[in-house]
Image 1 (cartoon, rainbow, N blue to C red):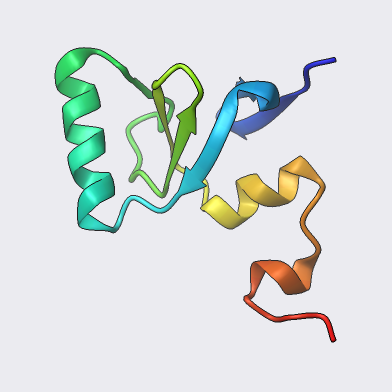
Image 2: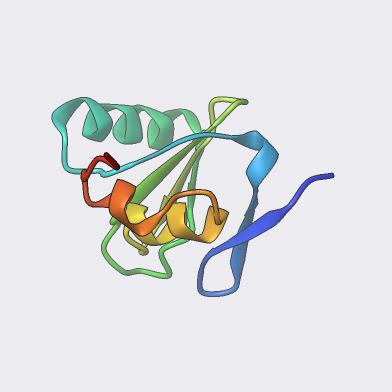
Length: 90
């Protein structure tokens, strides 16, 4: 059964369709976002705010969110707090 997660400002994404949640700061991601905007494959859910996360779907759509990637990942409910900070359980 599919589950929707809130990505900010009342917008939601189907978790079954998400491939990755990445930061928009890297140059390759910036190029992907620009290309998606030009081809109409970008969905801007930032409400005019700065894009802090890019959600990549299995249908090659990019969803832009004003929430941090860590915040979105936590909403999946499968990532322990330590893993999000790069710490390893020993």
